[in-house]
Structure formats: structure tokens, C-alpha cells
Length: 232
Image (cartoon, rainbow, N blue to C red):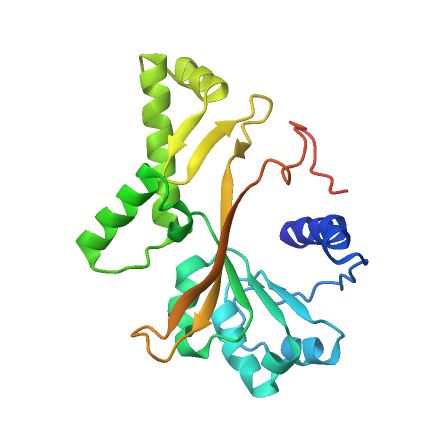
């Protein structure tokens, strides 16, 4: 539910600014954890006025495959997968519906203008011969490089000294600059999203369409340590 509340809050805030009209956000459809049959949920989606869909449950691939028989590709104009990144693309391949987006911790194509981003991408391709790395690789590099830089700035590995360095410095990573708010240690920096496009000519059946990287600084809620998150 936290993903839904965050999504609904963001849509209600930003959609009117972009479309000059209010968005209608429907109530979420819950699925049982571990379920393998989503036909009832898909039928409810088909009967609803929904034109966009946020998919935020553990098995989006099975649901997407089952929904093809319902023709939801003709109804839903935009699909948003929450965080499966390249795993979703590789699983769907040529069966990817139009307008399908996923989020990524590190969309490699967005950082080829950065030396660290370019170097990480080229090292990965050289080693694996795969031109499309997972965003999880990028966020791993960011974590390691951030701590390495914090230790270097602190001059020692003492916990308090490293925390102080993390709280008071900006760090260079393969995904751009990273800082941590002192109040709650919220990481501030880029997040990425990209469109998965079915491609019959590709060995894996898909290619990267549109993509973007954008700072989360404006979207991050104000620091409120020790208190429940309240979405506007």
C-alpha cells in the first residue's frame, strides 16, 4: 500500500501541472501473495475506466502474460512496472505490450556522458558481451563508491567518522551526484525509468525506447524522522 499511496500522491500533485486537468486515481486491486492466477483482477481492470496501470506486486510477468488474452493492450495506454528493471524486459521480450515502462536504479544510457557511468558500462560489456546491464549493478557501484569516498574523506573507518562524512559531503558515482540528508539519511540523487519496446529483430526480443534520469530531490518528502510517512 505504501507504493500506491506514494503513486497516488505524486499523480495528484504533478498530473494537473502537465495535463491541465485533474487525474482520476482508482482504488488499488489487491492480489494474494504467492498467487499465480490473476484473471479475476485483470477482468476487473478491463471493466474499469483505467487507461494507465501501476503494477506493484511480486509476479508482474505472469499477470501481463495472462492479461493478453483479455486484450488489455488495446485498453491500457501506459503500463508502469515498479522496479523490476531489466528482469521484466528479459522475461517479456517480444510479448511486451506497447507503452510499457519500468523503473531502474541506473539506466545505463542516461549516464554515458559521465566518466564513471561510461567506464562502468564499458567494463560490463567487455566482460559479459551484453549491451544492456541491469540497473542493480549500477546501484551496487554507487553504494561501494560512496562508502569508499566517505572513508577517504574521513581518513579512517570509524563508524561515527564515516557517518559524519556521509552526512556532510557530495559523492560522485556512475549515476551522478549523491548526498544524504543529515536529518533522516534520505539519499538524494537520480532515479531512472525507461520504456521497454518489443523488437522482433533483437535476440532477446526487446530494446530500450525512451528513457530519462531525474533527481528525486523535488519528489522526496520533507525529513520527518521517527514519525509515520504522511503523503499530501
